[in-house]
Image (cartoon, rainbow, N blue to C red; front, side, top):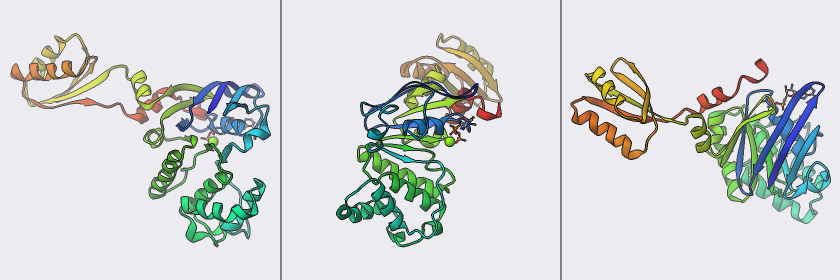
Length: 309
Ligand SMILES: Nc1ncnc2c1ncn2[C@@H]1O[C@H](COP(=O)(O)OP(=O)(O)OP(=O)(O)O)[C@@H](O)[C@H]1O
Ligand SMILES: [Mg+2]
């Protein structure tokens, strides 16, 4: 549905986007994660035709997006990272205005607007002034606006930024709804763990380059090629370490007070063999667990800190 090939955006000598490749199949949610200044907004604006690329190719639903700008507008719904101020415009008038921009027929407008307000849970604010809405409400209104022409693909630039925890949960629920409606979604955020649970795939961008991409499980696998085991013994720490060293699929053993952590490169059967051996040889094992890699660790590991460098 969305295909980006070797995309570059250069400002003078500086590359905001460098050799970026990305492919999102229909109906998927792709999470675009990266620190400040990584190139997320730049990439999204290029996809939407708001910024010209230095070189590269972008295809949306098979259409060459960089050359057939007009044709793709109807396919894309874009929610920018910043939105303006709208003096004296009510919520319904605001959406009515955008409906006109997209040349939606007068007789269909009312139903579309009502449905959208319901989707983003703003029906009760229909007659309120846009400027008087809370930030979370404005963000939901902006999302409604991006949906007005029923686009196939949504490009959402940090739709959950600046929202309180409750509003974030609500925003996520709306996005899941949109996924269920069959939309293809590209969504950006600084926070990997926030996207991980609702995205089908994730790409981490840093300094204009895609550092790693794939399903969350793939990424974890690539970064932590080995699993980790952590165990606690009530006694006989040295003996336990000696036993662990006998297994070829265990390495990098480190110890703390009563604690042992080690790398593990085996299957589930090997795992239970380890535990069994420890117990039958008299090690008082208190806890034995496989550690999941932490997503934020992954993020810190693959990015170097964006503009701070
Ligand atoms: N008009 C411009 N001229 C020069 N450099 C620019 C211009 N616009 C953007 N940049 C640079 O391009 C880089 C990427 O910016 P971009 O806004 O895409 O980052 P981002 O990943 O969206 O960051 P954030 O998380 O802060 O929104 C930044 O270093 C920025 O300073
Ligand atoms: Mg941005």
